[in-house]
Length: 368
Image: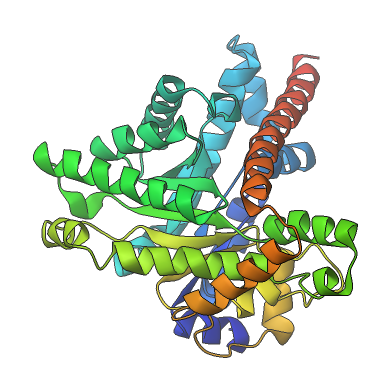
């Protein structure tokens, strides 16, 4: 087992792999990562599925059967992806049984529904029913329209991975949506202990956008602030998490059996080659959180990552000072958040289009 990844897990960080394919499942690679690399969860998205399906012959037989049955591309995508997630859930079931919180596999509602509350609810219900595993998580974006959908599906007992969170205020709204859903579930007599959730707070994209603006400003003072916004932003989010979970509202839900919606650090692959490739792992170590990593980042940490203790809690004042400095050189962080959310939704939609085109190509091959 990787000593460095084990040290990270021992520090209380749950290591999730941001990748999935039928090849990983059927070859035993996913089970091996669970055994050898402290992997205790999996996240997916349409881009990941597009890559897996384009590269993998293991999908061909199922595609041929679905085409022969007359199904359209949306149905084929639904069947291929839910089967992979179902089977990954089975690989991770022992982890879920042992830990309760981990052993989770995420699948995303259709990105085109990001601004459609009713459509998101219906998609989440369909995915939850199709995967039919208690350790699945349905990914719902933290758009304004996504928030009431989160409440609605949690109220029905569906476990949720809230994605595309970029700023503290929206994160507070996400936590409120989850707690509201739990309250409705409790009032309906549901067992709250079976409802799990994580809140995926995006990291590297924040530095990408802020650094671009700092370089456009170009002063020494501005340039000195590159690479500092993302971690500071995550630390503010964690301070908000601690505040909400110290509230009487949360304590009443916890007494009724509710589980904590853990912060999940997402987008933790480092985009800037000038930064350490383990930056968004080492600097975001704090117990009770999840870090979902691309395999490249996981391998980098296994090779040379360092666990330097809790780098997150108790750092609100330090993080606020970073944002005061950013504001002083002319960074409008509220505008950064608007741009990132818009781009995030747009990227999700483009990745869905990529998945649709990939599967159409496979369907055409199968029909020959």
